[in-house]
Length: 393
Ligand code: NI
Image 1 (cartoon, rainbow, N blue to C red):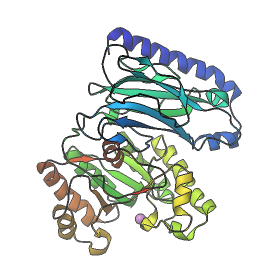
Image 2 (image 1 turned 180 degrees about the horizontal axis):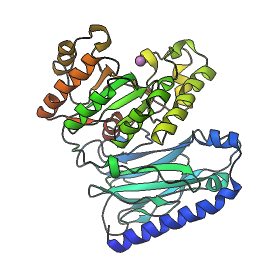
Image 3 (image 1 turned 30 degrees about the vertical axis):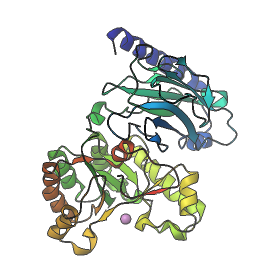
Image 4 (image 1 turned 45 degrees about the vertical axis):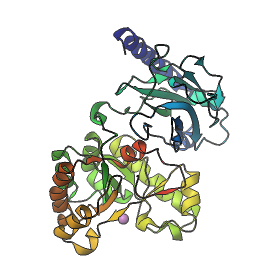
């Protein structure tokens, strides 16, 4: 992006922020605020040769190198009851200009489907636009551009430069936009043509997380930590370090019950209370939920779907909790790992930390990128609420 454009974008962002601050006087009541926290924006893109991606509330990038977006759609999950409004959007189609306005998950029309998307505009209307700001960032030429707020152009429109990817987010009116992909601790370039694996650690924050973080970082990797809510208060410093290091924090319930045996109300409590604790320690709630034991019977799946979450499972279970043996944990991974695997380990044992210290450099030597689960999912078409995911091939 040219310096002039960049300056305009940041000025506009500053203006949007200032306007938002002025609106705080008319803030929502406490219950409405609590409800508000859960609303998220999701989007999907149609890519040449591979069709529509899944819905994601994270960074959306092509399913494989050299495949570019030809259409776009967006939606909201957990829109507060009684709050009017929709999410609306347009896409700028190469050679044709801005499309008609679409809303609430209807795809932008791109007849023939071969012209590429150069940019998008996303905004809210009705009550929603008074309570929220919506942001979009475009991935162009390997760089995530500055956030475009409330209907500004995201992308380099009109110069024949297509988007590679997109990321959208809603925040309360006047709040800071979330960290966009590829900035600050999030900054790094993933090579979509190279294999990836996601190392995941359950049941923390716990004693061995520091060793695990250090081992991952020494290998230039990032991990995903599914935290048990009630354990967070005692180890907030570790949770903060995870977030600052660009690792991903997932939600593993408040007290580790099997969701298959809980009511919808109880499942919501388990997830929401944990997200409050994660937000308080790390600055933003978890985008991923891993149900304890992977249990998805009873009300678990419909409740996750209604809350806008997929179930983040795994494809290689190291059984580290059972063997408590670093050699066996390392072998369980290195003997069967393939591109797109999600590895299950736990934060509770010294032998698991030792196993990470040994396997992380070896995985890198074999050409794997050690990515977060959202990075892996984003690179492979995203996740759809209510579905369960193991590997991402
Ligand atoms: Ni667990």
